[in-house]
Structure formats: C-alpha cells, structure tokens
Image (cartoon, rainbow, N blue to C red; front, side, top):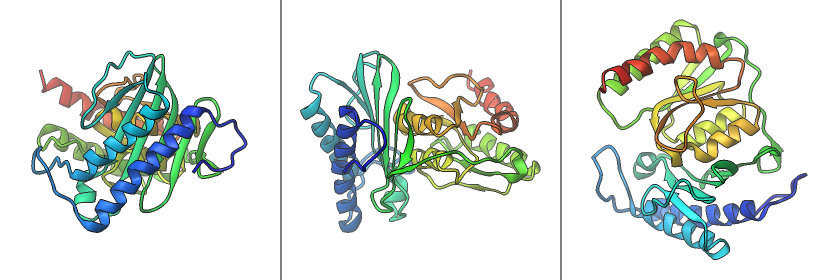
Amino acid sequence: MVPELPIPIPPELDAAFLAARAGADIVSHFFRHGVSIRGKQSYNLVTDADIESERAIVRQIGQRFPDHAILSEEEHSERKAAEHLWVIDPLDGTNNFAHQVPQFAVSIAYFHQGQPKIGVVLDPLGGDCFFAVAGQGAYCGSTRLRVDAAVRLDQALIGVGFYYDRGLIMEETLLAIRDLFRRNIHGIRRFGAASLDLCWVAAGRFSGFFEFELSSWDFAAGALIVQEAGGIVTTCQGHPLPLEKSSVLASNGPLHAAILGCIQPHYECCLGNST
C-alpha cells in the first residue's frame, strides 16, 4: 500500500495506510450496495458505513499499537492528552456519501505528545492518497505536494465549508464569501469533505479553505498535510489550531492575512452572538 518514497517509512505511517485502506474498502462496498442512515439531525447524517469503517480502522491500529489512544467521530473518545493518540474520521463527507455524491474520504492522523506526526487522507473512489510525515513533506502517492504560488486574492480559488448550524454561522459564512468575491477571487467551491478540501490546498488546487466550525477529526490529518506542503493553518482568528472543535483557515501562506481579513470579522460576529 505504501508507495516508494525518498523518505523513511515510520511504522505509524505504514499502520495508517493499512487502516485507511481497510476503512476505504468498507466505505466503497457500502457506496456500491447502499446504506442505512441512522440518527443525528436530518442534515447531519451517520450511516452503517461510518460505523463499520471506524471499527475496521480501530481494529487495524489496535493490532499494531494496542496501547495507543483513539479519538474518533463515532465510537471512541479517549483522552486527547495521551502520549500516543490516533484521530480518525472513518467517513468524512457522509452527506455526500448518503446522496451518492462521490466526494468523501477516510482521514487518519497520529499525534505523539500532542504534536501531529502522521496524516493520511484517502479518497476511496478517486484513488488519491494524500499523506504527510512531520518534517518530511506531504505527498499524493509518490508526488511531492506544494501549495500554489498565488500572491493576490484575484488569483485565488477558495474552498469553503458549512457547519451543520443553519443559523448565524451559515449566514456569516455567506457574508464572508461575499467579501471574498468583492476582492475578485476566481471563485468559491463547496464540496462537503473538509479533509479533502485541506488536501486540495496542499496540492495547489485551492489557494485557501475556511470553515467556521469543524471537529478535530475533520482537520487533524489535513492540517499536517497542508503545513508539510508549505502552507499555513490557523483558526479563523489567526491562532494556532487546537486539537478540539475549532474554526479552520488553511492557505498557501502569502494569502493567509488577506483571507483572514475577509473572514475574521464574520467569525467573530458568531462568537459575539453565542454568549
């Protein structure tokens, strides 16, 4: 599964690849043969594929590292302060998946002593496998990734995500998009799978991506991939990204301040009205 690379392959990366493939095989099977949708709100879905993919991923990691902690979307919420922590989204883009839209991914990150060391994001249908090793770069397959070279917003294509909130967060996100368009960006894209959106920043397809609220498993792997591709990832206030629910802004670097200037006032409006 691991491609030939000009870097050493740590055992955690090998395990992450095998676990991601195990999850992706299950997700692909359900995509072809249909799923049953479980609880949550009508717009925040969970399917059998989420549950079974997570169990397969956790099983693979547990076989290699039985003492490591797991933080995942569906069934595991072990301590974030653990020395060895795996952060897993077994199916990022569940709403796409449930509606037969082929834009979703399996996302796995490994943290050691609170620092991201490995990130893997696998597109089960498209076949792209994005990954990064801290200090050793980001890749798609055997191709080294680099963020794009845009230095002005009128050269930029921006990705965006919407949290499940249908009130103020949605409204302020739309206003932030308006302000970006007023800066003559090339366009906005909303594809519905944040892990892949982040990888597309790393690959130079987007100059930036933002979302006002994401869970840690949505961005843990993708954030490392962006950083190892030469980009910057912060909150929508410009702060370091925490390993908990957070706003997220990823960029190629040169455009970070300009995008932040458009979106930060709208994010802070959400904060001001939540208290």
